[in-house]
Image 1 (cartoon, rainbow, N blue to C red):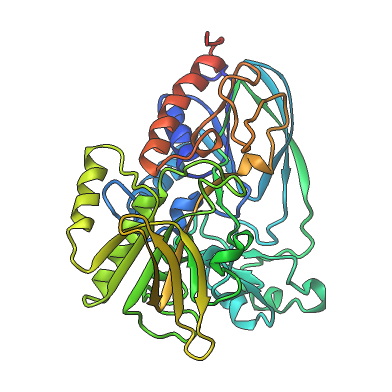
Image 2: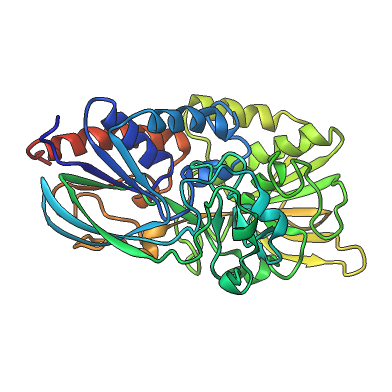
Length: 422
């Protein structure tokens, strides 16, 4: 395969990783580009994921090993594609590499953190705690190397981390640079962002501390999260005994996301089991419009959750959430469409099932590709040899993302090897 051009994969989440390892393991050279300082995407932030409800290191560790041990894979983190030109089989790509300020000599010993005086919001934990300005993205990060957040680092004015590092791994003079790559085909797997819940005025996110999002719940339940896996109220750190999940928070709403995000119902049911496992007496309320549990496996999971006498499903759209300023408890106001009554339910924590917004809504592919009104890439509208997959084209779960990654590997191989008929 020495004469073959490389396959370029943009996005280091589960879709992009799958494409990378599948193509590389049948003999193709692959370059993987990721804008974060680590690989793993949203899956790395989850406590458990479907279909097996296993922790993320279950699947990611295997794939990281496949990447690390395969000489055909080259990957760049903190990298962004700036320009694409050329045609199928012969693309020219310009990639911007942003400075990490920490080089390959880093052993992740942590001495730098001990002396750093500056703090930053921990974006991996969705701002629920803080790290130092020099930090390890998370304990399972790949590559396992520290990074400096230049927005918070005092650089040369401080430089205490440089003095503390025994391995000369910190370089505060690193600069961004551009590199040019040749690619026979390109797979665009840039994934999704949680919808910005502060835009949903009636649900109180950003106003009330005990209203959180579904991704925040994943971090609260994770052993490497801000509370070391204990689900506690953000306002006072207390244990919870009554929790409400609000489905379609911003989804299926023409003022926000007009579409269904596919995974939210199952995510909330999964998170309801997190609470029930930690607090056997806890009561759970799930407010929903419709329940989506596609396929036999997911339907069985729905039936299992539904059979729990401490979990109550309420069919009705939430009108608003109010807070008792003295206790920080919350009241969920909704209409129960089955009883046709307006109800007020007092709870200690509310979890909003916010939808999935494609990263391509804001970060476009730098070539002629068409998008729908929501920012998803329209399939087969770009140049031949460029393939968008996963949440770049529609909301999908982890299993579907991996499956699409495998299919994209085959298409990319065909394009790189001489073109594929659509």
